Amino acid sequence: MEHKAEKAVFALLTEKGMTLAAAESCTGGLVAERMTDLPGASKVFMGGVVSYTNQVKAKVLGVPRALLEEFGAVSEPVARAMAEGVRAVTGADIGVSVTGVAGPATDERANPVGTVYIALAAKDGTVCRLCRFGEQSRGCIRTLAADGAFDMVRRYLEG
Image (tube, rainbow, N blue to C red; front, top):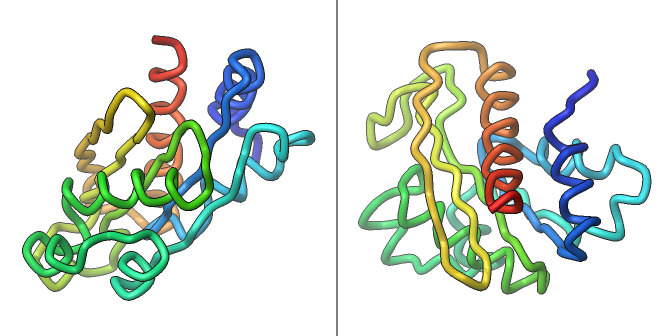
């Protein structure tokens, strides 16, 4: 499937001499897959971590267990910590994270299907956006979440 969002991000990263890394939960590596589908991606894409479990969020990305226990995996504080963690682990200029509920049912904290937090961490700080994609298929939610991550990175790079 042809996606334009990652091509725009690739071009902007190349133009600015910057790098990106992704921490993904509900997207299962879709952001990384779409970036690495592009020829020359190794110049701008440092890597990705599919942190599907809280154990990986904590051990690999350094998300504080206290945040996971207090707010749950699908939350703004955890999305922020994931983005900051993948940036630190990879040395990328920008870390983007995606955590949410792709369905078919609510999570253990009753977050509705389609609830997704997308965060971006860079040297000048971390921002987070809550998206509510609604009751759609897992595949649709994952695609919309990846699109949202690319959109957030593109907007950041465009100033």
